[in-house]
Amino acid sequence: MAESPLNRDWSASGGGWAAQGALFDHVFRPATEAIVAAADLTGTVLDVGCGTGALLEAAAAAGARPVGVDISPAMIEVAAQRVPDARTLVADAGAADLRALTDGAGFDRIVSRFGVMFFADPVAAFANVGAAAKPGASLTFVCWQDRRDNLIFHLGIDVLAAAVDPPPTRPAPGEPGPMAFGDPDHVRRLLADSGWVDVVVDDFTFTSTYSRDDGAGGLTDGVEERLAIIAATSGGELRAQLGDDAWFGLIERSRADIRAHVVDGVLSHDNHCWLVTARR
Image (cartoon, rainbow, N blue to C red):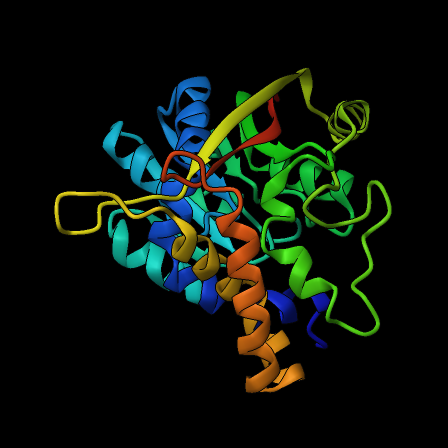
């Protein structure tokens, strides 16, 4: 069977995300905490697009039975090592037999942190996820709003994108991609069409702070951490395309762009998202 473009992309790029999993968790910690607070992690919990296991770890700490699904083998490997009590599977949650992961019992809670926006057919995918849920089970996830002022998609990245010929194209509204669920009415419709009820889409803004302990009693400014995220998510392909000399020149320009946003010695920015809840 031919591998889908989605699977090819994450099979190739997931290694970078896996290598920087701790940094992503640091930057996205408020989103993780919001999901944990809203979801009431009890019973058997499915994490869709579990990445390197932040929500699996939280579910295990709450005494729940965590199950994680992701299409990146590299990230599943990290998640399995991080949360050995979790059941993990490399699979597309939109098509896999998820109920089988509970030996037929079904899930009590379904969660996701930025892991549900890439389904080719979101109605079919959420219906498939719902088929693995117990009656009354809850769904809780965070996704991105489609806003130009979401700096996480621009800071240091626009410099690199400007060097690509042809320039990268942005998916149309509703197409698979980070901002696929940017329209809250679209989210409500697709969840209703896939069998979910009591859908609530709340505005959720959190701050990402990149600075971390520098090991000497102080904090880094976060610039290199931001560059590490960029390199992990898009750097490998672009470096191979441009060659090392051009790549290192671009990185210096990207570093300068990022440093211009450091305030009082710390790099941080707000992220505008939706916190979505529903019930089966």
